[in-house]
Amino acid sequence: MKCPYCSNPDTRVIDSRPAEDGNSIRRRRSCDVCGKRFTTYEKVETIPLIIIKKDNNREQYDRAKIEGGVLRACYKRPVSAADIQKTIDDIETAIFNSEEKEISSSAVGEIVMDKLEKLDPVAYVRFASVYREFKDVNTFMEELKKILDK
Image (cartoon, rainbow, N blue to C red; front, side, top):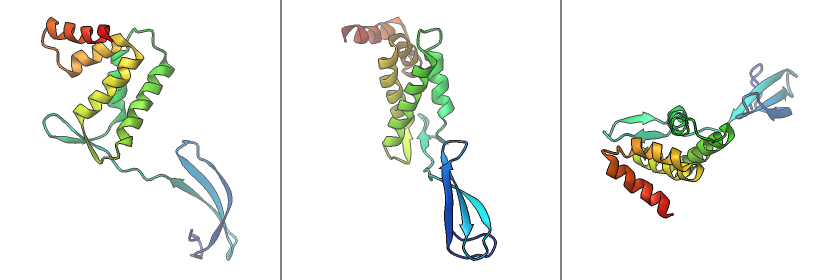
């Protein structure tokens, strides 16, 4: 790391620790030439994920949208906040593990439904009714039968 004061190309790391946000490393450094100290932050570079919507519009991935959908599906259900957050983390991990730069919203929806089915059957059906755009009671009953048959 180059010293910001004297531009010496070699500096020493004195101390390393996680930064307050928990997503980066804070390093205290010292220059061997001028003796001044400075702090650097090291963060993993992430590739922005693009979601391809049903109408072929593209938008940047937004965790808050998944959180909102899962929270609405779990509304007034006996599911702990910790379980909901773990499920959202699992969904996000599955999305990013695909290592794609672009992913369709339908693929994201299927991942969410798969995780919700394991979390709470009622939350799963709630989410599926909106996601799959159930048109009538028969479509709703078909989805319920799938759950009951398992």
